[in-house]
Length: 359
Ligand SMILES: [Ca+2]
Ligand SMILES: [Ca+2]
Ligand SMILES: [Ca+2]
Ligand SMILES: [Ca+2]
Image (cartoon, rainbow, N blue to C red):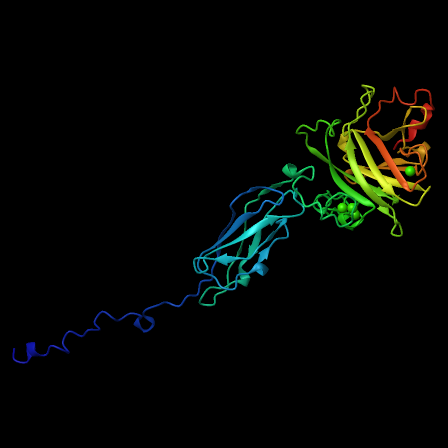
């Protein structure tokens, strides 16, 4: 027993339990890349120019996260500066809706390959926000919008023109209501706006929905002559006339526009409307008080379905019968009715045969 109990040190080898894998002991190397847990918007029912906060939440803290990692191609808005207050797990930025506000889907996407964690592992996978809505209604008509942003000075602000639906089957680009591949907000001879679906939009719009309308001046089948200097300065709705025959349906009232052109010239126009309005012409009263369809062959016009839009082509001469100011003064003012006139009452006192060739 002598020495036995006196060998305090060496006997119970301290490392007895240290056998397996101790070489790499304290921290296992991180080989797992970060993932994105969610993209959430604080408010998912937005109106135009109403900002909200977007939050990106990762599985662990990330570096290198910036705007280049985010796909806004279907977001219809812009993102401000990203910042994190918890060391890189949760990031936020201000999101402001801008154009294309009535797109079918609004979504913010992110690819993880551009970010990495503290150990240098690249991110893995991708994620999307839920679809959110952006509504222009509360901003119409032009209330609350920045009227100064009217690039082409046709008195329709950019944000409204940039929202025009494209033409299905052609380029179908939002903001290009006449399908020529050029943003209407930059074309002073192309004006896109929203009309209220009511014959009394001017006096009593109620809460009727909107219908898009595009007017093209100096038009050749809806496309503008590039050499044209014609300029649209107004495109607005007026109430349908009070003394209208009950059989004549004017679902959006009178379409009133004003165009600047060379004095005394005749001009060709195209008006794009929704074919489901069920209208059959661009109607004006002639000098005898008879409604005539200027978008018909006898008047040098026509109606044509172009994709999912109905195009009404017609001509009006400055100072002519259908120029409301009656003067060859370089301005055409034209309030016409995009309307459905029953065949039974058209052409009374005039040539009925002229209405056979509408389409
Ligand atoms: Ca404009
Ligand atoms: Ca255009
Ligand atoms: Ca325009
Ligand atoms: Ca005139």
